Length: 88
Image 1 (cartoon, rainbow, N blue to C red):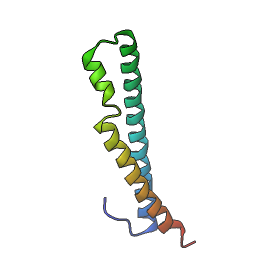
Image 2 (image 1 turned 60 degrees about the vertical axis):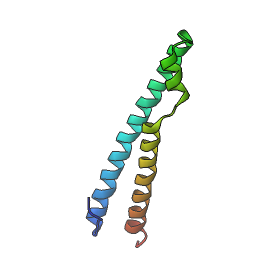
Image 3 (image 1 turned 180 degrees about the vertical axis):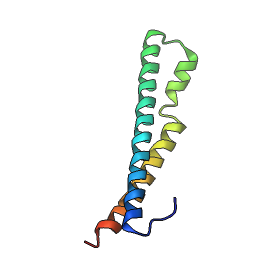
């Protein structure tokens, strides 16, 4: 998506980015749920080496990449909101 130039483009850009934020937060919530399931399983089977290895590496690269994406997306949203409303 190109940098917005008009107010209408800024509103569309912000709406699109907020939609992306919503999706990423749902993905993050799903990952946290999977982490909780893993810990529950490890409580029941504490000697599961694969599970222990996975748990020791939490939150993991995918979670970190998604949180970085969310942070960067917020910076873009904030910049466009300032550009849109700073003139008023």
